[in-house]
Structures are given as structure tokens and as C-alpha cells.
Image 1 (tube, rainbow, N blue to C red):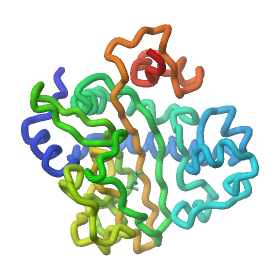
Image 2 (cartoon, rainbow, N blue to C red; image 1 turned 120 degrees about the vertical axis):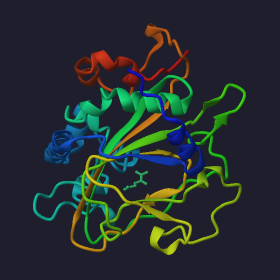
Image 3 (cartoon, rainbow, N blue to C red; image 1 turned 45 degrees about the vertical axis):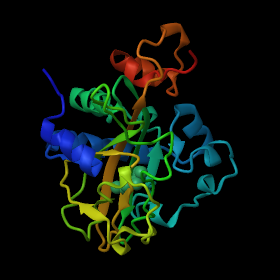
Image 4 (spheres, rainbow, N blue to C red; image 1 turned 90 degrees about the vertical axis):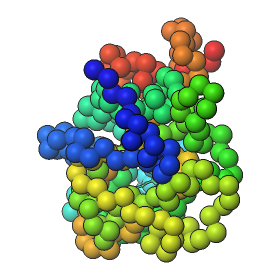
Length: 287
Ligand SMILES: O=C(O)CCC(=O)C(=O)O
């Protein structure tokens, strides 16, 4: 079965920097992904436990290298306020290391095919995390864009070979009702992945930037975007809880990396569980 982008999707992605797969996941899959977030939130926020499993704080290296970091003492960013009832943390990185409930995304042939097409060759999954926001909550600063060119996240189309050549693309699975702007949907500046100027408008908040648009989406929809496109989220201005799961895909260094030269950012317990998807997880390290 082919999962190539349609001409309409290619046009839209090229022009805007994102597309939405409406109703990609059914209720059961959405419930499984929510359960994955619940599992990740149930992991004790403890330096030793996180390190042993391989999950990471959203502060990433700053916390993972420092047992004294404020994250381990209960400190959180204001936009990652823990769940008021469960105390669940607003984001866990390297999520695959702490739950198998996101595996359905790793095994999703459509996501694999689309991100491979957007990279113009083999990809690996370079980041997996969820974001939970407890409203009211800031949207966060808009980030990235076509200028200045960032070698790690740029958008590109290779006209010679007639294929996309993007350095970093993401799938965001929407798990809450983000069909209303007050619920804090994903924010995008369409076309900004090709910008030749830095954005002169307010980047602190999508609702203050006249070029930003809300990407309204319902549970089960998947927003696929170039990391080079300016994005973040609209503020949540009511008391709803907003959840989504993020997978980042980047080109593998070589198309046929030699097995003995592979290195992976994932620990053995994840590689064993997802052995059938090893090429998506075993990032090619040294060639
Ligand atoms: O919360 C969102 O929808 C966007 C988050 C974001 O900008 C990111 O994870 O890169």
C-alpha cells in the first residue's frame, strides 16, 4: 500500500510548511496515547529513576546531568505546571523509554512514509515527548523560521531530483479539543519556513503576532510540520487541559548504514521492544 503524499498535500506542505491529517487516529488510538501520557506522568520525578529508564526531563541535559537541578526538587516552568490533581509533569522527553503506549506511532506506516518523503531519504526518530498544558496557560514564544538558515532544522526542496530534502519534520498528534482558539491550538506562521528575513512582529505570543494562524484540530488529527517553520501554540485561556504527543524525524546520515557502526540514543530495553522498527530508532552515528 502506498502512503505517498498526494499532489495537494505536497503543494500545501511546500507552501505553508505544514499539513493536517484529519482523523488519522481513531478513539482507541487516542485513548492509548492518553494512557501513555498517564504512564509517563506516573514515573517518579527522580534523577535515578529517569536515568535508569532513559526518559528525560524537559530541561534535557541541564537536568539530566545535574542531580541538584530544580526539576528534581519540584521546580517547574510556569507553562509546564504539574497537573493540579495528579501532580503529573507537563512534559517528559525520550517518551519511548518510559511507555510502550506510543509504539503505535513508531509502527505507523503512514507517518514513516510521509516523514521519509519529506526528508528525501531514510529517517530516524530523534525525539519523542508529550506536552500537557493546564489552562489558563501561556502559548510560549514563537520559534524558528527560514532565516537565518539553521542547518539542523531547515526546510528544503531539491529541484534537481524533484524531492523534499527537509532536515527536521514533526508529527503532532492532537489529543484534546483544539478546534477553538481559546483551547490553545498549535500556532503557525504559514510560509515562514521560506522566510528571508527575521520576523519583525511580536514573537513572544502567537496571539500578538498578526502573521500567526491557529491550526484548529480535533483529537486524532495529526499536524505534520517542518521544524523550520515558525510555530508554537496559542495561549489556553480557559481551564481546559490540553495534551499532544510529538515525534521528531530527521534524515539518517547514510541510507545503508553498516549495522556494526550504528549507535542509538535509545537504551536496549526500547530497542528490544521495537526490534521490528530498529531502523527508525537506531540512529546512525559514526560512519
Ligand atoms: O505545544 C505545541 O503545540 C507546540 C510546541 C512546540 O512548539 C514544540 O514542541 O516545538
